[in-house]
Length: 161
Image (tube, rainbow, N blue to C red; front, side, top):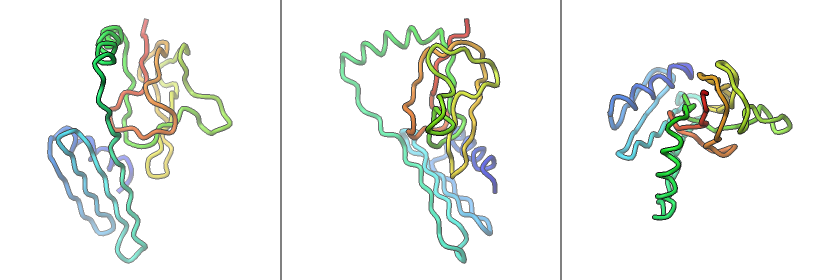
């Protein structure tokens, strides 16, 4: 089972509303659990004959908002409605640069076209280039470098005008 099949399975489980799905094949065991707060956990183990390897992706903790920041966020969300959001197609670790000594793929104010790489997301030791699906100017980076991201989490805001 390759990474694309696993990603498609995760998307399917997330959309189906199932709380837990277990898949066991000859060489792979996968359990996907979703809770009421849309958290997703993936556990993958190698065959019993080989050394066991378990990979777990924990959900990003959400902090409660204070009343003053909630009012500010409501004003910002009204302004953000005219922008298009680039979202994460997979779970993994978000990186803005191809390597530590290289410049960032996309920064605030940069024009991007359809197909331009805006970041990479590392999932299971594979670095997946994330390409823009829209043309426009990056107005906001919503995720810090080297932080975990969830499936469908907003990464960038793009002004299409």
